[in-house]
Image (tube, rainbow, N blue to C red; front, side, top):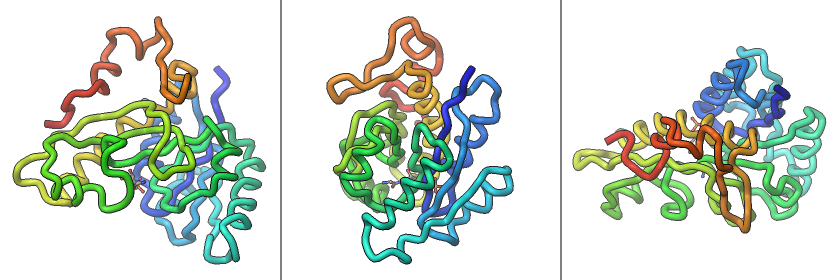
Length: 224
Ligand code: GAR
């Protein structure tokens, strides 16, 4: 099997990146990580990736006069590593329409809520403030609008009556670590594909059949 070459973009600790690294170790996983790039040179995830023998790069956005100049170097670094798909994994930098268009349908993002609800930062506190009883996480294709784009997969997490921001974030993060490798696999294999700005799942695939992964990630509480 020809594995898809992935570029992972991070800004911090990189725990979602780590879950992708682990998944990619499996010989039958359809993706491999070619490069990990952080816009913050001190991101802890860079060290983790380097220890795994993965090429890492810091492209510090503060060294650039404009977003465009930063993104020109980012784009080139991804090209140099022959990246086919980008996975944003806690990459907390807004990207311009120009960059997003260059990677149209080739850039995934994970967000810690059930999109389209609770876009943006401080998600878990806003979930608690709103009093919703189910939250979760979403892997989607990147579009110009922040935290928007065709949804590849979601996992649901119950909000407990005694949750605080930290306890809720921890349970959603655990779900993220399962969801991202699953969504990337579906997309890399072409089992999930875009049609009219929504994701369709091919018939007769593992995900479309009644096998466990689909049940796990259909809209139900997996952590309640
Ligand atoms: C994750 O919870 C991810 O969903 C979130 O940042 C965290 C990064 O953690 N991303 C966003 O909020 C994007 N809008 P990690 O560095 O340990 O993967």
